[in-house]
Each structure stands twice: as C-alpha cells, then as structure tokens.
Image 1 (cartoon, rainbow, N blue to C red):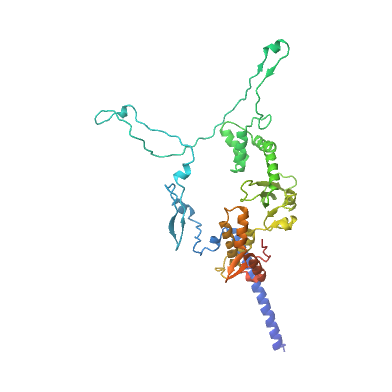
Image 2 (cartoon, rainbow, N blue to C red; image 1 turned 90 degrees about the horizontal axis):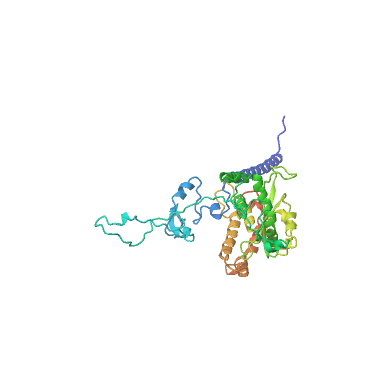
Length: 434
C-alpha cells in the first residue's frame, strides 16, 4: 500500500511549489522585460525627448513614422512672413512650422540687378506713333543662380633685376621680389585647394576617392594618395601649432566637457580593421563666449588614462558621463551629467506597459525635466548670475510653505526606492546622481 502524505507534508510541498511559481513568474517577467528592452533598442525611436516618451501630454504632438514626407511637403516653400500660426493636430494645438521668408533667406546676400528693357523699335507707341518715356521699374521675380567651381593654374613668376654698373666692376648685384612660400614645399597645392579637400572630407564627409573623381571631372587627375599627403602635411605644418595653442588655452578654462565615441580606423598597427578606436572630444562648453574651444584627440583605446594624460596639469572642473574610465581623474573635481542620469529612467520604459503613472520612472524623468526647464530660462545670463539663480531655483523649492532642497530631495527619494518599484527589471545598477 502506497504511502499517503500527511497534511504537514502537503503543506510543505505546496509552499515549495508556491515559491517555485514566484521564482518562475519573476524570471518570466525579467525575460519579457529584457526582450522588450532589446526590441526597443532595435526598433524604437532613439530620441529621449519627453514629448516622445509621453505622447499623451497636451503639448507633445505624436510622431509621424510613415507620412513624414507628405506632411512636410504641405508646408509652403516660401512665405512673405515667418509669423507663427496655429493648426489643429489630433485634439491638441501646436505651433505650425513655417518656411523662412525670402527676406530672411536672401536679404543679407549680394544682389545683381538685371534690367529687362524694350528695344528702340519697341519704344514707339503702337497707338499713336509717339516715343514712349520711362515711368518706373517693377520687380518681377528673384532667382538664385549657382556657378560651378572652376580650376585655375597660376604660374608664379618673379622678375629679376641687376645693377649693370656693379656688373662692370665684377660685383654683380641681383634683386628679386619676395614671394610667399607654398603651403607645402615642392608641391603644386595651394591654400584654397588644400582647404577645399579638408572641408569636403571632414565637414561634408566626402572620402578622398570621391574627391579624386571630382578633380578628374575638372581635368585635373590628382591621385587620392596626393590628396592624402596634402591633408597630412598641411595639418602638421599649419594646423597642429594652432591645436597645441588651443590645448594650452583649454587647460586654463574653469571647466571642460569630455566625451568619447567609437570609430573604425583601417590599417592600424596591431589592431584588426573591425576593432574599435576612440575619438575623445574636449570642449570648454557652449557658455564660453570668448574662447569656445573644441578639440578632438584620437586614441586606439578607451582607457581613462587617455583623458588623464590629456588633462595633465589641469586644475578646473571636468564634466563627463558615468563611464568608469573617468574614475582615473580627480573625483573632487568630477561633475556628472544629468542627461546620462536621466537615461537610466528612460531605459526602464519598455513596450507592453501603457502607463507609468506613479512610478519611479516617470517621477525621475519629470523631476529632471523641471531642472532642464529652469536651466533653459537662464541660458542667456552671464555665468556668475546663472550660477546664483540656478542655486536659488533648482536647489530651493517651496512645498506647502516650506523650502526644501530639490536636488537633495530627489537623491534621498531615489535611495529610498528599491529596484522592484521600477516597472522594468532590466536595469539593476544604481543611478549616479550628478
């Protein structure tokens, strides 16, 4: 006869099954959230704007995915005024974008006046035969003309002079005018040609092999290797001294913003072509009016030692994201970024959850949005004034008649919450507060 489990054993088995069920539910929830997070990374819009995160807000218009071209083509190409107009958009109102007026587009450019006149025969009245007299002018239309680039070969020739009297005394004296040295010694490159190659490559992203074809179209078959040599030699001779001076000036600024981004560089010694290198960018920031400096520093790796060496001797504050490599810098002068702190909340939003009302996700995004709003109101003020007003507006807020520190309140609130209050368990790392 088989053993019949006792009530105590059944209760124990039931508890184990309940615990296993809870673990399975948690695992399924995590896997579902992770799958949604990956789908979001692959297919969802990459923007982090609040109006996209919360499209139901009255001031946040929906984003058009499939009829953008048709919607944009309804805008007038030219208008006589650029005044803001209102248009109805699905139960809410927003400012209608208008094209710039002709005066705004063409007003500051040089104009060439072309007068269309009657011939001598046409200046006779067809009704009575008397001559016609001018009565004024009328603007019919304005057009923009484009003149393609043209190539000009300039032969620099100097005239030489000699003193015939000195020559008689067998003491020849020859004089020639001074001529500016070429941009690149022993090269036919001009400053305009080299600058054109650099602008096309680094501003308009046109590779040298395409520029080679462009020069060939002008009957100047310059090999791409020659174009590459122009870029390298002119940079070393003319631009690097300026970059070094800018670097020294940058280290004198009170604050520096730093970021790094991966790039693929071919034919790097000791690295595969598919491996990542990094371009580090250092800038004095948009609020620096007199010496706004932006410098790029190429490195083969992402180690924080790259930033440490580049900023050697710097005594100001540096502003970065929460990349661990910046831990190599002085932590007492390290300022973190609100945008990257905000991203931790944005990444918690996954498909399948219709509302985030009352969650830490929406609370965090809303609080940081309030800080952004305050900063935007202070953009045009001098740095010291902006600092004082920011401290007054962002750090102090009045709640039920009591002043509270907004930033400390936000930080304290985050520490009180545990990860289960976030509707997505994808992110389990703590959020760094700037």
